[in-house]
Image 1: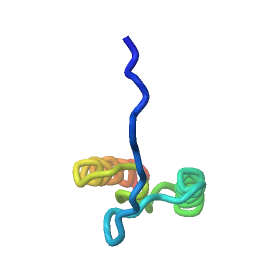
Image 2: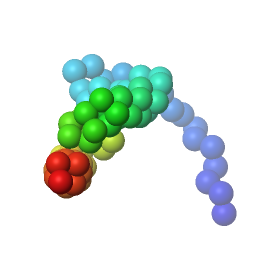
Image 3: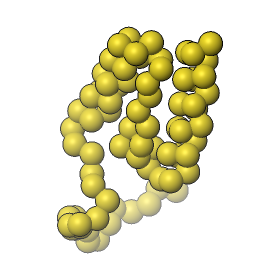
Length: 75
């Protein structure tokens, strides 16, 4: 059974908090990754919360993947 519409809601910007990614951010990050891949033949990787994750766990996992990819590119 569907939920009823909310009776009240509001949006409150939280200043000095986790930043919100702007419009077009995923496309820019995809372009950056492609550029790095072409220019550095996979030997340079960029990782971080704004590049494909939202938490420390995502950053750690991305770092592991980047290390494996750089190792493959060096071989």
